[in-house]
Image (tube, rainbow, N blue to C red; front, side, top):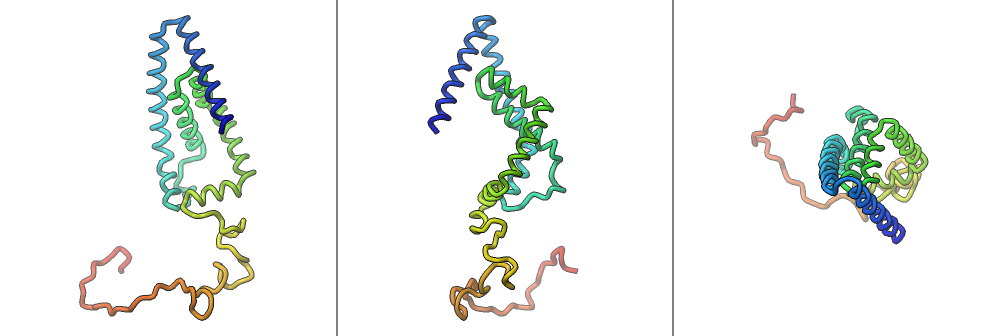
Length: 196
C-alpha cells in the first residue's frame, strides 16, 4: 500500500511540474481551460461507457449470469471499458494522464489491451470465478475447485452432497416446520399469462 501511495505522489509531482512548464510557454489560462475541457470530455466518456456496461453489471449483481446472446459484441464492450478508463484519466488533472487517455482511445491499443485481458483471464480462471461468485453474493466455490456444490459429483445420487433431509432420521432438516391450511376453492382468481 505504501508503494502505491509513493508512486501516486511522484506521479502527482511530475504532473504538476508539467502543467507549470506548459503554463510558462503558453498562458496559464489555456492550461486552466484545457483542464475544464478535459474534465467535460472525461464525464461524457464515463456516461457513455456506463450506458453500455450498467445493464451487464446489474445482471451480475442480481446473481444472473449474463447470456452472451443478449449482450453487445465484444468489440463494443472493449470500447466501452476503454472509454470509461479514458474518462477517468481525463478527469485526473495532468498532461500525462490526458496523453494516456488519448492512447487508450486508439483502436490498436484497445485490441492489445483486450488480448492482454483475455490472456490474464485464461491464466487466472479460478480467481476470476471466485471473484464473480463473491460479487453475485456467493462465498466462492464451496471449498472445492470445479464443483460448486462440494463433494463428489459422480459418487452420490444427490448432486448437492449428503442426505437431502439432513443428518439422522429428520434431524437438521432444511424443511420449515409449519401448518397446512385448506385452500378455499370459491375465491376468485385472476388469470395469469400461464393459464390456458
